[in-house]
Amino acid sequence: MKNKLNILLLSSFLLALTLAIWIYYQTTHRIGDIAFDKNIDNSAFIVCNEDRITQYYSVGTNYQGGERTIKKELNELINSLNFNESGFITYRFVVNCKNRVGRFRVKMVNSDLKENSFKSNNIKQIQESIKSLNGWKAGKLLDSYYVLNFKIQNGKITDIF
Image (tube, rainbow, N blue to C red; front, side, top):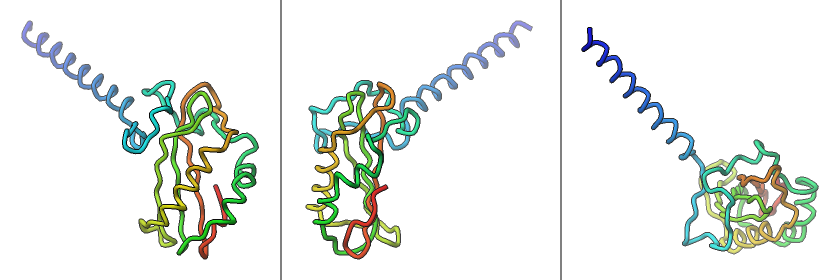
């Protein structure tokens, strides 16, 4: 009887330990997290809580005036850039609790949604323009990820969403 109780207690302990480790891993290692990379990220950009960067839709992070204002403020850039083909450019970045942006990551696909590469000079110009936008508002005093997509048709940016 005592052996069965010991086995039950040991099994329960191991199960609880395994569950605790799994939960810890799940809460600290999320798919899509943008870790600091000293080769491409600005070390002056600091997040407020490295362990808790949420998605923009969870905390209400947005740009003051919305997408319409972003398009308006980037209008000159939109009209000046020329691309070789059509596709999408997605910028994913962090808006920190002080309403600053950093840790940019870029994904590019062609109109067939196959991985692609556009002119690196254009990519850098768009990224610098996003950095220069001053209306970012963290919905709560939390760091959050944000995504901006640029649609390119016939060599021109036709939409930002």
